Image 1 (cartoon, rainbow, N blue to C red):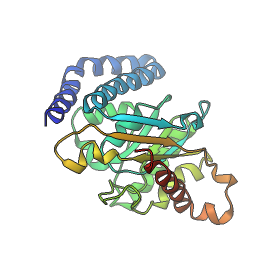
Image 2: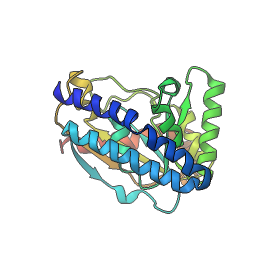
Image 3: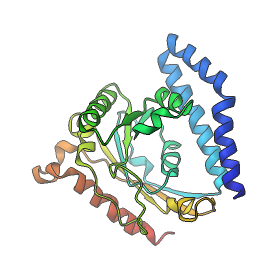
Image 4: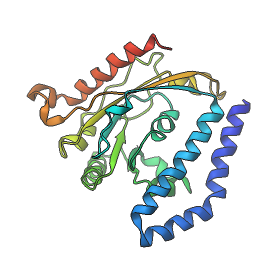
Length: 246
């Protein structure tokens, strides 16, 4: 419970203490949006690294060299824990907007930082609004900003990492409409940080592997038609491979 309480204090403290920093970031953004984007990215990454250090999690990272450094990408990952965002965002070398639940937009201060980072808020219960969010993501990628989405739509609460929820095919329009590389992210054992013994946070070993880029236009017609299933199978095989490393 001690780690959980410390993490709560860190999150609350960041949101409150960094209000002046938020105001400075707004000012910087008026004159130099690019500088504001980069400084906001590094500030939030620093906060996330502190939280992960507090949890005591040991992270094995594999394949980060597969992420292109010269163009935006669409990150696609399996989703088992709230900590999946921290585990992956701390490794983003360039600006990346995450697709989050619409309800997150109502969280004071946190939602402001998320907007600073070009995060998108998706209402999955409203297909028209969800499509609008996807199209906003397409424009982000066209402008040079990467996007990360967990296409299961919510955290999988199944017992095994291998038992994923179906991937929503609509999520992949972000790549098919831009032909940007899809980077599969396979995350093993992240639910062991917190969700498996809620509310306690425990030390554990997590594996995060970045797969080779998948270019939509280079897929066969059938694989492109069922691209969600194709990418999910790539992630599943990687999850199976990495189970033995835990």
